[in-house]
Amino acid sequence: MSQKTSEPVANEIAALVGPFWTESKVCDVLGVAADELAVRRAEGTVLALTSTDGDTFYPVDQFQRRGDERLEVRAALVPLLRTLRSFDAWTVAVLLHTPAPELGGLTPLDWARQGGTEGTLADLALVVSREWAAGAATTG
Image (cartoon, rainbow, N blue to C red; front, side):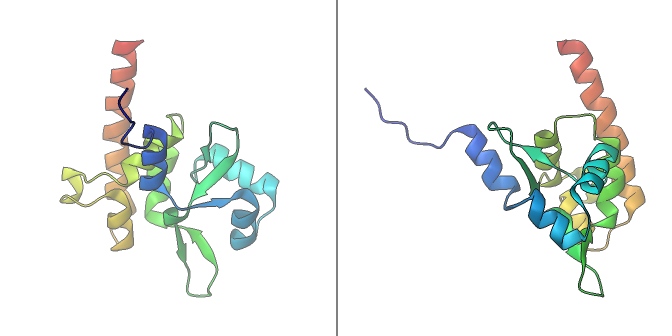
């Protein structure tokens, strides 16, 4: 009997897109109530991931500190998150860490961190959305 040498795929994905904050931590750092955070999730202005246990977590990398020391979702990511909100959130989280030729080989997160424009990420999101939708249509 061979011994398992690697972690399950889900753990590899969590390692890639983590660390994570809980809902209460995100409410605290954003200064919002849970119901407002739920609205933001539905609108696609914050990325939330659901574990296999049904718990909701928020990738920390999507947040940045403003000049007044409060945290917010990186503005350049918001159009991408909105456009892709109907797709699997874990897949979107992986996309944020995936180098894109449209971004000169940067990941969307690196693009946002380096001050890249919202428009470029919005354009990328439209391309990805069309590709993912077409893939779903051919597999479904």
